[in-house]
Structures are given as C-alpha cells and as structure tokens.
Image (cartoon, rainbow, N blue to C red; front, side, top):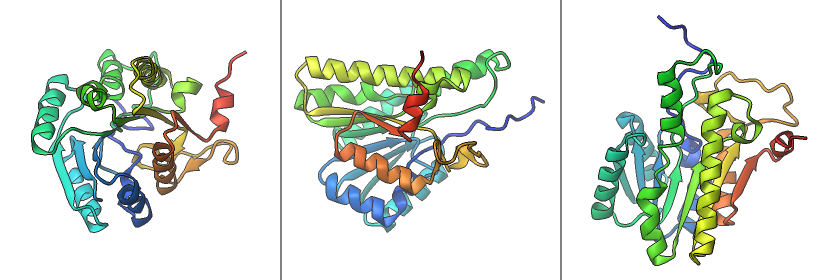
Length: 256
C-alpha cells in the first residue's frame, strides 16, 4: 500500500468558521437578498445560502451551524464539483428550487503533498480536476452577466504565486489566471456590476494544514480560520480582486 504523505487528500474549506456569530453577522448585513452558493462547504441570513459538497453529513452540519446563527434559508446539495455533468445538473436544480446564484464562492480543493516526480498520473489529474476544473463559474456567470449583478469568488493559494508545491501550485496558478481572464472579459463587456475576487492564502489552520509549522511566523504566519474568514468577507464587501494573505507572500513571488 502506498504510504500516506504529510498532507493527505482531503476536501477542505476556508470558510467553516462562517458558523460563528461575528462572521455570519457580516453575511446578514451585506448579502441580504442575495443567493450565495459555497462549494466545498464543509469543515469549516436574509440571503439564501446554498451548500455544495461531497460530504453529506458534513454539509448537513454546516447547514445546522448556519441556521443556529440566524440563517433562515439554507439549501443543501450533494455535488462532486470536479464532475462537469453533475455540476450542470445541480446548477439547474438550484435555479429551479432557489433561483439564480448571485454570489458564488468556489472553495473545494485537495492537497496531496507529494513531489512532482513521485505523484502518480491519476493523482496529478485529480489535483487539477478538483482544484481547477471544479471552478463552477461557467455554470452561474451567464445569469450574472444578463442582469449585470453578481460576484465570483475563488479560493486559490499563495502557492499559486510562490510556486512552492509543484503540481498543486500549478493548479492554483491556473485558478488565478482564469479569474484574471474573467475579470478582464467582464470589464470589456461592460458588465461592471459583476465582480471577481481571488483568494490567495498562505496556510490556514484547518484540517488541510493540520500540524503545519511556519519557519517565519512573523513574515509568513499561519492564519486562524475565523480570522481568514473575516478577511475574505471584507474583501468581498470591498470588491477587491486580490486577497493575498499575508501580503508579504506577494513579495516572495517576485522573480528577478
């Protein structure tokens, strides 16, 4: 049997701590009347909250936490976001049962933690499929463009800037490039009411990075999940394109 790497393959999310009152209060205040869909919603409102994930039980727990802190409209769907047919099928169900999604948070992903020459072809393809091809923007962007209203949010990684973990970095770099291209298309199409935000965290203290220790905590800190979630909500509110956490990671990405 193949030995487990330091970072086992896991569905992960930056947003489980949205289940805390301070962060949900931001959702209630800013997203009233919106339909918010979060992929990879486990682990981790007057708006309608739609949760997609492979983990049915974890998804239900996230729903319970959301309702406990005030959400009155929570819809739970089982979806493998790396499966294009399933994404299209579930997107149609959401449109019929809830309405057009106006805020999309792409948050599903995996990190296998193997070196480039050691990873199997199957795991290489799985990483790209889950981290990049699971971006569900295409399923919901047309409706946003039609009404010139909406917000696309994708969780990438500082690894996409730093290129520090081989093929995982490549998958996150692809997300950054795609979001930049979408943002440019929206601008040139005159759809200024549709915004895009790409999130590039270093490491966040979730199951994905359990036990990770940074060598430079002052320069490259590991963020508490609740603190990271608050920063993400702030970036969405302020309609920032980039959220780089910490900002110092951007300077490490500059090549000479």
